[in-house]
Length: 234
Image 1 (tube, rainbow, N blue to C red):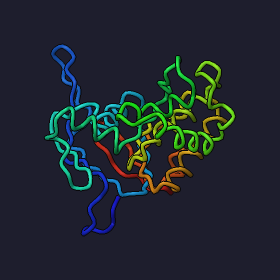
Image 2: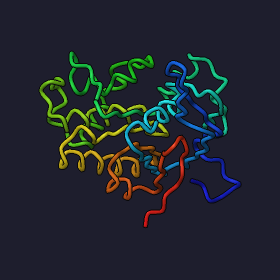
Image 3: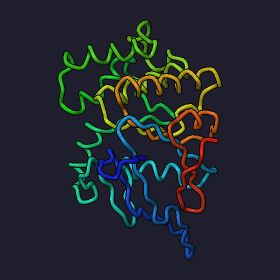
């Protein structure tokens, strides 16, 4: 989070509230949550299962809407934008990586990485080189033409990471990106996320159960009882 009050953060959430209704019961997931992240900053969000971490990430990624509150990107209010405007914003400015890779099995690794650009209307020739370069950066230059079922779990997640970065986003949102991997593959994916964020000057918010990984990031936030609080690294 920014220590300079005159500097506009890359991304800010103000007074976010979210609840779900279960019959006559109301379950408060987020209660007056405030949060900001600067360009190039890496932030971990940790909390118990069911604490609302994924819901928070989906709201920050404009995939879900809060009951109350505002989202600001470089000072621009996202809350009042249309679905079409938010879709363009996500495609241009956000990268997503999830616990399950969500790759398209009928396509090769490089085709999956190119997909966000093709969806945005870019030509295949325009996307092939950056996709190939990213696959090389994540150690998969020898697997570019392989289909998803021919890749290991770690290779699939590295392909998903390349896909998340191909549009050169400003902010990466990662939901348990190592949670479905063995320790070795998980550590490799995390180290790649760290190094690529540094290389691209990319901000990152990562939801994780892994405190060891969280401590390697710039800031740690705990989501508990619908409230987000910053934790010391010590």
